[in-house]
Every structure is written in structure tokens, then in C-alpha cells.
Image 1 (cartoon, helix red, strand yellow):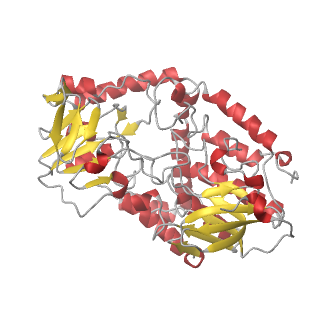
Image 2: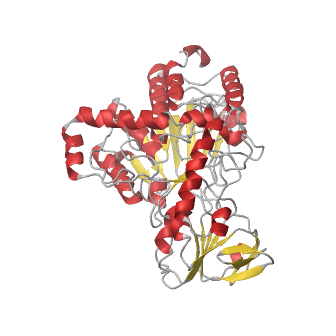
Image 3: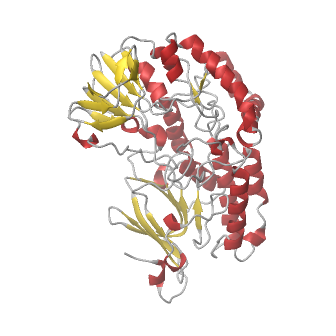
Length: 500
């Protein structure tokens, strides 16, 4: 295994590629498009899968869609006037990304089936040396990691899970060969994925058993089909398209106030969610099981019009007691079902199919490539960073969608564009020299981040996937997205080694 100390003496070389981008989802494709628009063509885009798209390629479960408006959940520098709905579905978003590849001529610089195993920085040569799982070796001056924060499915550690004899799959790897019609189906999890596919499969199955650990706050999803006339207007009048996107951005940006300034304001949204639940679920006992005991926003707020009504179906049982273990035939829990709600002593629920809707491993998931910087430093061991983009000790390395760059209120694409803009400016300034954030600048940023995070709703007492094992929010930005954009624009030269 190589380390950064193995570089030895030598002089700077000319790597085969000036830039290598790892990951071809929104982040990697956006970076590649902006490089081409800036006239930088000496780059290579690596994608471990057979096609681009990231999460929108992988998640093909029934009902998969975005919960940010389509015209905001797309590149400002590659706009589309052809979205069919206010909230686009998976297939349409994937088609948009594939269209970007064709429109901007990225195929010649895209290598699919290229899974990064290790990247090591050689200081004497001022280059990154990459090894793919296939054994292929690459060299680059600049390495950009754009693998995505939610690219690895989270598999729960439930005893006996591997023993289940029937079809079993994660929602991110939906097995479309399995016909659920007339089957006894178990779903573990009631998060963002489950609330989309449960209403789609509930009318098909004989019995749907939904295992809920923690209920979610759910609000209406104001989704509408976009008329041909509206789409023609957006296509014909670019100023109207920009104005519409601007309106969507600022209307969502205002939602940050209860997340990061005054979390107590969430109580008004909680009242709205309770009223919405009361209208949609007729069984008062069931309804009580669906009311969270934490402040709204502490966990992800979900949008749905049909999930809660689907729980009224006689074929659907909500199980709220803990899962003890999985057997070859089903799932054993600590309770029994009465009137659609589980209470009492343990029972095994016999299932034909088991679906895991257990989300993703945020942060640095198992299986992520080993990235070695100066003096053998391992990226997985480094907490300090600047804006989730640059890490001290890792010259010419940039992260897209890195720590604390996610949002709970607005479009992640806006955040990615801000990061891409900063990377482009650094690429223009450092020329052929190394570019590295100063350790003191990263330390100051980290302290400020922790200080601002303390007042947010995400640290109000619940346990969520936003938090690491130590209870620190390593996922979301504790402020307004416009503030993050300004920091990427105004980052002073002195915080970089060399000060350029």
C-alpha cells in the first residue's frame, strides 16, 4: 500500500491529466460542464457505475421523485424549460443529466466502470496517483472528489437479516424482477424513500407490514403538472425562466429561518402537520403512532400527499415495536398487531418479500476509496476542512458535496454550484503550483461551524442521520445558502498556502 511518503526525491512531472473528477452525479457533471465552459478540457471524469446520474440512476423504486422544485433542482448554467411537473420524477431527472452529457460533449472525457480504490499524493512530483479497482493506474495534477454524500445504502445491523429466504433488497437497489402482486411484503423504515414507494405498492400486495422506528413530520407536497403553454413560455422567454428560478430560490431560502435562527417557529408548522395528519388518517390510535415526539426539522421533513392515506388500507399494518431479529420466513418483533397498530408481546410476521428503506450511510461510508495526502495522512481521519471543499494536508484536492454542505431547506444544486465556482477560481489562480488550504483557516472555520450549529433545530434533541457517532452534525450547513455562496466568493487569498 502506497503512502504520501513513498514519493521520494524528484522533480515535478507532467501528469497525463490535469484534473481527474471522481463521480458523475450532479456534482461531477456540473464540474465537468463548467470546466468545458471555461475552456479547460484536459480532464477525466470517472464513474464507477455503467452510466452517469448518481442517486438518480440508482434509485428507481416506484414513485421516486425529488422534493425540491424541478426548475431549482437543476443547473443554472444548463437550464431546462421542459420539466413536466413541479417536482420531477426520477426518470425525468436522470434524462436531464444524460442530456447534459450529450449537450456538453462529455462522453469522450467520461470513463464508466471506473471505481477508484486509492489516491495518493506524491509531493515531490506534485501529482496525484490513482489506482482503480481494475488495477488501472492514473496520474493527475488535481483531484476532485464528487462521489456524493448519499451514495452508499445503509444496511441495518439486524440479527439474522442475511437468513431471510425470500427476495430481499434495499430501496436504492430496487429489484424490478420481483412481482409484489399478492405478496406479503415487509418494509423496514418510514423515511423519505418509503413514503414515496409505499403508496405505490400498497394496493398491489396481499399484506404490507411497515416497520417504523421513528415517525416523521409530513407536510403536503404541492405538486402539479406543468402545462405545455407554461413550458413554451419558459422556453421562449429566458428572462421569465430566470425570474421563476429566482422566485423559487428565495421562497425556499426563507425557510431556513426556523432551521438555523429561531427553531421555536417550527411549532406553527407542527400544528399544520398535525392537522394534515388528522384529515388523512381516520384511526385515532394509528394517528397517535404517527406523531413525532421531537421538534420538526430535527429530522428530515417529508413531503407527501398519499403516504398517510395509504396506511388506512386494511392490507397495511404499522408496526412500531422494535425488531428483535429476522428469520428465514419473516421478522420477529417485540409486539403484536391490534387494529393496525402493534402493541404487546412478541410475534413473528411471515413475509414473502423484505424491502429495506433504511437510507444511506452519510459521511465517509465503508468502501469509500482510500485518499492519502501529505506525510501519509488519511482523508478519513481528518475532521478539519474549509467550507467542506478543501482539507489541510491534501494539496490540489477538492471535495464537492463534502461535510456540512447539505441543506434542509433549499436546493443542494445551488450549494454544488457555489463549490464548483470556488474550485474554478482556485484552478485559474494556482496554475501549475500546489494549492492547499491553511490548517489555521480550517480550524477557525470548524470552530465557527460548531458554534453556529448549536442554535440550530438539528441539535434540539433527536437522533438523526445528520449526526455522527459523537452527536455532531457533519452533514448540513448551519445557515442560509446565500451565506455559503458569499463565503465561497469572498474567501481571502491569505487562507491558502502561498496566498494566491
